[in-house]
Image (cartoon, rainbow, N blue to C red):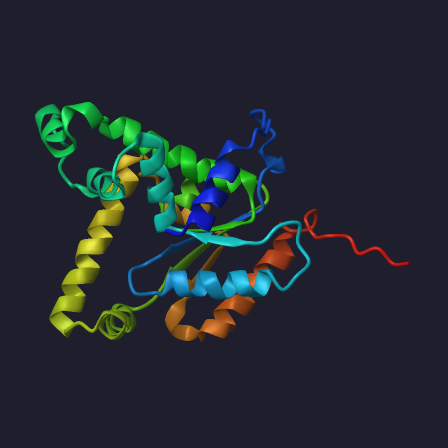
Length: 240
């Protein structure tokens, strides 16, 4: 991850903002995108950010996904892959297994790792102008008023073809990839204690097989406008 992005994350997370309980309406704006494997969520998030940044906003929109693990690892003084390993492992670590994997000097409990990731996601959601892809963002930021929570789904065959094309995999390899990643995502949600039914948190659910990339972005922009999550954040233009 580039130094500029890391600096951005650090500055956002270090900003002192006073958000009292019950006043989360002042947080955001934030967009979360949950997706089934093979729905090209990151690609769509980047296209959406490009469109949003054409508008006169108070800040530029950023797309964040894996960067959340990098920042969490920095907070924990761990390698990012160790954070991922701890949260994606189906069976809970025993104390001895964690010590072996991380080394006693850098030992962090699963609870500590999970809470740090949640805090990073929550801080980014509160500070606003972020499109959070995955990472249970729709659950962690569910109470934020100025938010739009999107779910991307598609038939298995559509997703399978995308994975085969994007990763140059055979049909069998792509199918195994989808199964593995979906299991990891379920495990991640359990690790951060976000096991609630996710459907209730979404403002908009889109079948990726029914719309082009451009059409999906237009649907999201339409929903942003109708929900008015950006009403208070556009720059005012002074006329002389």
